Amino acid sequence: MLTTTSTTRFLIVLILLYGTLLIYASLMPFTFNVQVNLHQQLLYKFWSYWPFNPFGRISGSDLLSNLVLYFPLGFLLTTYSALTKNRSTKITILTALAICFSLSMSIEFVQIFIVNRVSSATDLLLNSISGLCGATVGAYLGKRYFNDFINWIQQRWHQWPLDIFTLLLIMLLCADAFAPFLPTIKLSQVWHSLKRSHIDPIGGFSLHPWHWWLMIRILPVHLLTIMLAFWNADDTRKGHWMQAACLTSGIVLGLELIKPMIATRDINVANVIASAIGAFMVLISGAWIRQLSRKNILNLAILCTFSYTLYLGWLPFNFNWNLQAAAHKLPTTIKALLPLYDYAMGATLDHARLFVQNITLSAILIFLLRLRYHTFANNRNRIYFALISGMLIGIMQEGGQLFMLSRTPSMTDIYCFMIGGYLSTKMPHNNKL
Image (tube, rainbow, N blue to C red; front, side, top):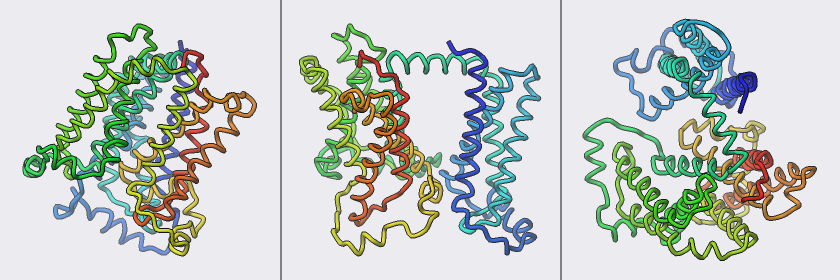
């Protein structure tokens, strides 16, 4: 069990890390220009966006991202206050709101002096609402559930970390289903998406090549089904394959039915069929997996994870082996080498998905290497091997993108693979795995 002291220390670290990340990402790429008309910026441009300007517009993704951005900070602030101080709920919420508002206001003011950044009262308003919502939830529920959640995560992490990766894989599948995240509540857009849906399986399967269906739909769902069957390290799994297959199929079906609420997505029956194939394949592969040795299971898992990682990075395989064209994709400025540079400049929820995806895949792959090879498990050298391995995997993936027509390599992706490698060294080396 985590003590209150350790929990509050953990909360402080999360607050500082998240606040630093907000400042860092919001001020990227740090191209300061002090020669601006401050009066004109504050009096006119700052108020020229929706809702202060009735003719101004804002996209659904920008609206949602700003409403989500400060929610975690508000939640963490009031949760920490509720665990450490005997203040009234109203004072706790107002204090967290003041901190979120002050941080957002400071960032918006500094953005006035940064090229390629837009400072607006709209962002300040939405960020404040986001922080208020998070603070309200944290004040009423944080103290009650945060300790239980952290205790559960810690217990699962030490006893059966596969459960944590199962939850991460479900989150990544959800993010992939809704990317690019452009939510809509307009009935006309929803109806348009429904009319655009692919009810014919043959037509749906023809949208992508066979290897896409295998690598993006069948194998990830198959892996998720196996992981759900092994949930909670249960040793009596004979009847769990069918339950896991039905549960995974239900998750995929639910995700598909929600897609009309995303402006650029529509239902494709082929997705449900391919995912069901991957899910119910465990009825055959489950018996085969039991016959494999631990060594061969790890070899297979390493091969599949490595192949899947490179496939995601090299899709759609439109390679062009022109060295001159590849040279133009290399970073030319120091700023391009900064962590999160490409992600912050893109500033979409899809970049957040890629950030988590690269870290997670790298952590899984290098943890599997730790289980398979004693060199990676050595307590003295494992961090160095993990960082070097993550860097090499990232260089391999991003190096391939140098020769692709539709992909651009990113130093941030390499950093993500190294972060994932480092996190893998913090996972308990459980002999049951």
